[in-house]
Length: 81
Length: 233
Image (cartoon, rainbow over all chains, first blue to last red; front, side, top):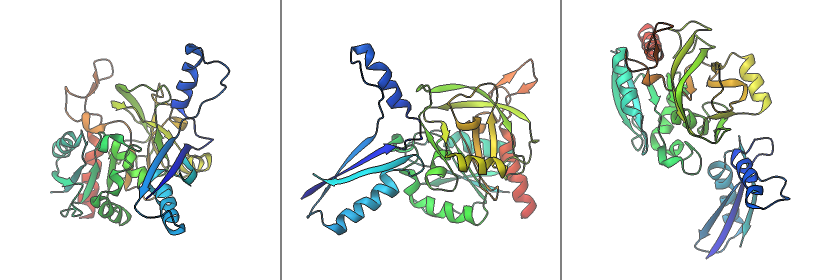
């Protein structure tokens, strides 16, 4: 059994309203010195066998076609943990 | 009589209102089910508003893989009129029938208001009964309504007259270039965030004593489609 983690982030040119709101709230709680926050998604995919090259290729395809929307998001990492 | 299908996904909210709008406009409303690929010989399809699959992953992202969507995409590519309202618009962008995407409203709040739009393109399958430049007021209610696309796509849409509707007075969600709705190149597929199906009967849609509106500014979406279908029948 292997766990593959997929990280998806909003494209740099896309405004990230959620990240902006989090960034604005941090100083109010005393967490100063943080210039910018961008919020993304982390998916944990568990597969029955080993995370072979073929399995990873399939996961990457799933990440790029369903887990992310290429119009607004980038798949920034697909890694085995 | 023209047959217009309204798709129900798990979490659709406005499917009954959309069906009612179809009937009030003079067509037969046909209920379509997300898990059934059969379009039941409809002449046009409406993808209604709501929160299909709870907006999980992204709004419209899971619905686009519903069995009926393959049939809708094939029919749309064959010229069938397809209208996506709110969540339906999000589904149409996720399935790539329309360009761009919707992200969370710039101000992060759910917004519910009577919204004025300008009909920029009165030649789509769903807008021929309007005049280009006509302003209409219909309800708007969404959380993920900020229309975004890259600059090249936006320029292309503007250049080809594919910005179908633009917000007037106030941009309620931070949408690029005040875009409220767009059409595909052929003009048969239209998507918008505001809700024409909630403004089809006097006394129930947004109205005003000042400007003589009767609350029916959304009805012409449906009568446009019906007229087009009858003309080609």
